[in-house]
Amino acid sequence: MFRAPLRPLALAAPLVLAAGLAACSSAEVTATVTVTAGTGTCEVSPTSVAAGTLQVTATYTGEGTGEVYLYGKDGEEFTKILGEVEDLTTTAKSFTADVSAGTYEIKCEGGGQEQRVPLTVTG
Picture (cartoon, one colour):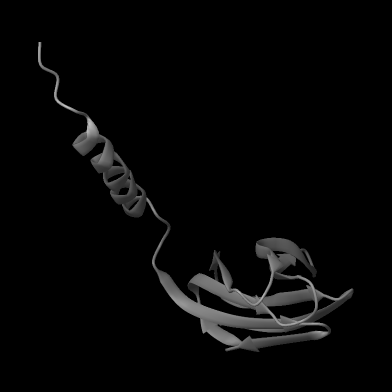
């Protein structure tokens, strides 16, 4: 009895899986914010974006590694983490978060210091 090799099927499986995952991905990004964190610094551009799915792309320029967080309000304080990247270096990392109109904060941590920058989201 002759059996055909399974290689073509095995190679096609990851492609089918990738196509399925792409179809199930989150909403389309409507705004992008770039963050450059450093020891005691936090550069955010732009600081005002439209509501929708926000992509935050961050890098770290200080010694060691850094972290970047997007905070929303929980009551009156900016304590609700909506997205984060840790172990940042000069290689960019990104996350997405759904944001509605309001004020948010981006927090940069590195070198034992933190900085917070307001982010305005318009309707």
